[in-house]
Length: 325
Ligand code: MEV
Image 1 (cartoon, protein in one colour):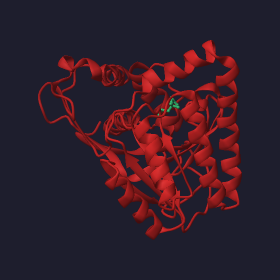
Image 2 (cartoon, protein in one colour; image 1 turned 120 degrees about the vertical axis):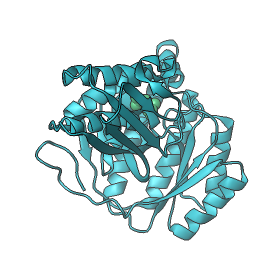
Image 3 (cartoon, protein in one colour; image 1 turned 90 degrees about the vertical axis):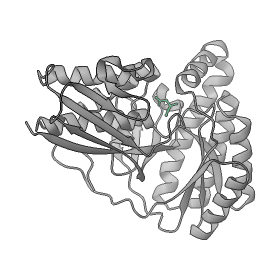
Image 4 (cartoon, helix red, strand yellow; image 1 turned 90 degrees about the horizontal axis):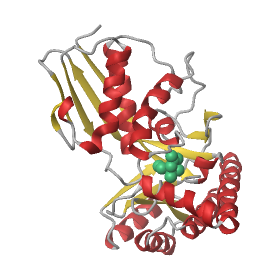
């Protein structure tokens, strides 16, 4: 066992397939390298303490909205038969919380990794996701697993619940993604149960929307393999239309999508659970991305990020099934 350990994970952006992924449809999601979570764990301390955005103090006094994190840490201590060790866990996150960027999933992934590093234990990708999802189940109820799969990946992922979690290879060397935060908290648990209720109460309208979102994700994979940015943009706008019909968009997100397109974006949609959170759009080049980001900030976006696609380095993964750079 080491005295100290460090780990990292990333924010995620769902490009295609939020909500429909809960019902077994495919999704495409991207890790954001420059929006990350760092965990630092040291045993050179007394007691068991944590320091994060929401709480600083003994883990047994953690506030209720961190219950998922608390249960996860206890589970990790049990796995390593280390319930009594002294430790201090510091979590530093650049991910805005409750904005559809996978803040809780990335935190859970970085916590699992840092404990496994401390105990110098091998960690397969499946084990990592299984453990991180302990936190997600408590925080969000019925997670598809897409958020933890992306937060722990170095590359874009193609994901089907309980079936597939593989890297998706593409070559968009000129296009950029613009992400804009509406500044309004998203509500993952509420949005997921709202869609669930609609599928039960109004299956004739909700089921075709879920099916169509799945078809769009498949078409997007095709468009990625033929490097067709214009098609990808259209598919994003089509997704937004379906997500809005499902009831998970907001006035601000709808307005941001229109502003992005009016300012030259090829397409735009909400990302993540909706009911707040972020909008994403794609542009043909960096100059166009900057123009869209400026227009969105003027329209009230509290933060914007511009993400190139060319930084993704694709590889075939290591012996543990981990996707590596
Ligand atoms: C939340 O980031 C994404 C949803 O599809 C829920 C999930 O996949 O668990 C809305």
